[in-house]
Amino acid sequence: MATASQAQGPDLEHGTSLPRPKPAQSEAPTGQAGAADAATPALDPCLSPTQAGMVVLSSQLAHLLASEPGTASGRDPEALHDMRIASRRLRSAMLVFGRAFSRRAMRSFERDITWLGELLGRVRDLDVFLLWLRAYSRKAPESDRTVLEAIIQEREAAKLKEQQALVQALASERYTAFKSALAEFLHQPAEALAGHKQGRVSRFADKSLRRLLRDVRSKAEAAGTDPLKLHRVRIASKRVRYAAEFFASLYRDRLTDFVRLCKDIQDTLGLLHDAQTQLAYVESLPEAADPAVAAARRRLRRALKRQAWRQYRAYVRLRPGLLSRRGRKRVRGWLGPGNRLKCRPRRKAAAGTEGQPSREG
Image (cartoon, rainbow, N blue to C red; front, side, top):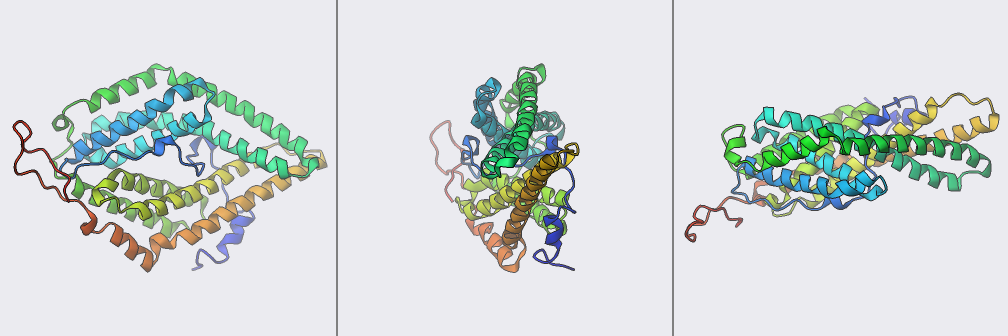
């Protein structure tokens, strides 16, 4: 069986193993960190999983709402980027903490945040492609620039259409009802929302991270050069990264290197997915009768295939951090029980506060 660094790669280089994913399904990041990546509030190890979930979900909802005005204006790409990240983090929080809540209650929220994330993703993906196209055009041969400008104008028109759909969605009854319902849900007593018998969040965090880690490893082992499977690796690495960020304070903030590894894999595979999606669009253009137009498009396709190949090779260099014996040993150290805070309730508390948790480790 060929290894990842062997001849599987040339198929990717020449595009024969690149399917045409739908742009609407893209979740690819830009590789840039936005305001929505701000740290999650520290969790007290004495909290129940439901209480911790309420803290994290409330934080991510606040990030989402903070980015809404700029996104709704249609003129603030950074607010759009931040809102997209916030929507992804909020959905990940729902998936991570879903077991701590009534499953029925969370299901409708997950549907709505997925719907919103897809709308945000369509606009952001076009933003990313337009930035790349303009940079490529500046370095392209003079003879190609008219062809590239026509593609840029068509993608600008597509972006405007998707942006209008997003603005309408943010003003819709569905989005308004989602915000109100989730905020109301998070203001209820934790006991009323718990999906099962509750323990401590520190134990819940350990089980959740190990489950998500097993998932990303199994997907990475099976992916090879298959673009769809690599996209699933990216989604799995994103989920374990966000979960590690949610639980970082429970591990004495010693998950920094683990988060960085997952983020690097997520970003690298995101750029690969961007290139695949952009290549799919260029290959879908009607065949050009003009030889000059056809030649410009060929050069554009080659540039996108090179971009995909570079990102795949970058992923191959990162993958041992998850799968090699040394990488597994490092991850075990990061997630070791010695790094995890324990619940130690105060023995003596002021009147009215007895039984409140302490973060002493």
